[in-house]
Length: 23
Image (cartoon, rainbow, N blue to C red; front, side):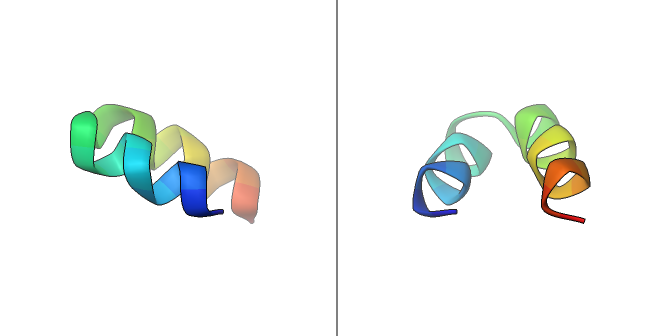
């Protein structure tokens, strides 16, 4: 999850995909 937050900061788009996986 930590790496997920890092990606979110770099690219908001990735954040959406990562969040989807989290669910």
